[in-house]
Image (tube, helix red, strand yellow):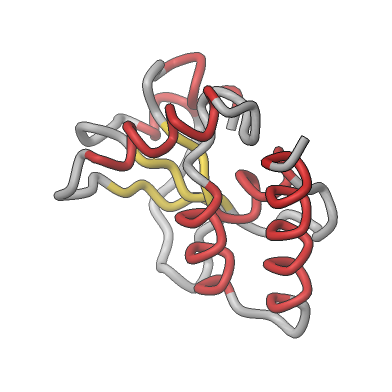
Length: 118
């Protein structure tokens, strides 16, 4: 996702990749990138795929507060810059499915809770 964020500053990473930045525990199988606008990901080597086959999902949210909540978590030193807030990440990880989703979200929760209380 570093490739996408270098090409398009201001994007936020979520899903397994976002969780991996905070609490590396689960094997990354996909990422979500939040952007203010649509992006030309084909110029970066990505190809269009069905939702079941995609390894990267681009989201242009109707609610722009995702950037404010991300900034608050970064300021609190709970998430690295360019990462969506942990609640959004947990929601996105839950959507990816898999037998270890609940454990992955628990690991994310524990890491965020610990960082918040330092």
